[in-house]
Length: 385
Image 1 (spheres, one colour):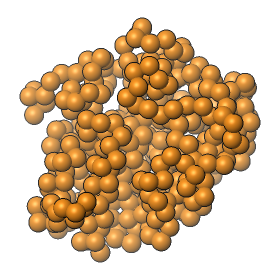
Image 2 (tube, one colour):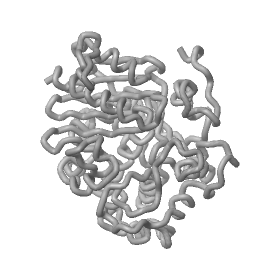
Image 3 (cartoon, helix red, strand yellow):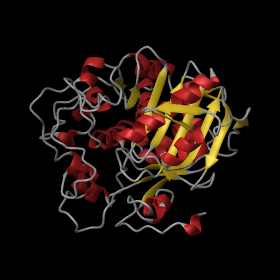
Image 4 (cartoon, one colour):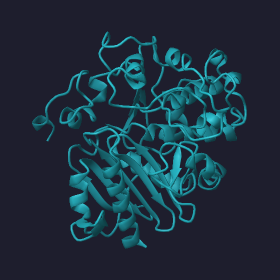
């Protein structure tokens, strides 16, 4: 499988078809920090197999099987759990032990870690960012709170355009070491980039504005609050207690600052374990990992008015965004974590379902494929109810 795929370089690792190999070999391309686990690995029980070839998806006026939808959305790995049992698994362009980058699903994982520190009294969501990171003075974050950062409600001038070779994201990627050096002028490292971003005209908290550097700042805040580096913290509080099957890792810049907005790489099964912990309101294999109050807050406390004034309202017109998680419909019991190029955690409490998807979609933000993927999750949930 791996030998048939074209090997990526730092120049092309996010471009199709090189991304198919690159997304499971990130540690061969950029520096990473390990996120160790603890033996023995927690078992994933097997349940009655879903027939994905038979299960129909009706979307955009056409009909296809779930199996066909997986192919259409460039799936590398896919797993569905029903009440904690694996009912579907596809390893297409990866093995069970490969660590696939999950891009912005990293934000959701990082914010769950924040919830543990809040319970420990080390972090206050309503506190100013400057309490933890005084270096933000003079930037957009100088008068922002941690809650603004968590909910993507910071007033900041940053355009999240993944395809502009000279734009904010290109400079950002140069700062984090994801692009070859010298291609574009940028700040020296993630933290320097974050603290260089200016404030916009509107007040903090008035609208949803998706800005990835917010979530790198969140990782920096966690490190300061805990007095521990991010990889060690995530390992100690989540990866080891959950007995994940594989060591994960996170990309770091030349100063070892972690890319908590998008650099976590983990196996498909461990992503499913994380989703199952979320479905069980913070418990996994009978052990409390994350405060139930934090997950309930995500489910019920997002501000729809704030979301509706943002630029992603078409994705979930009735949705909310809270602590780096999407709540698509206030009348349902669904949580989503979403990353570019087709990375997903989908949790449906009513259906007792968790689905995770790792992909190498050619276009970073592909609204049509996102909508098809979401329709597939809903069809599977209906089948499992």
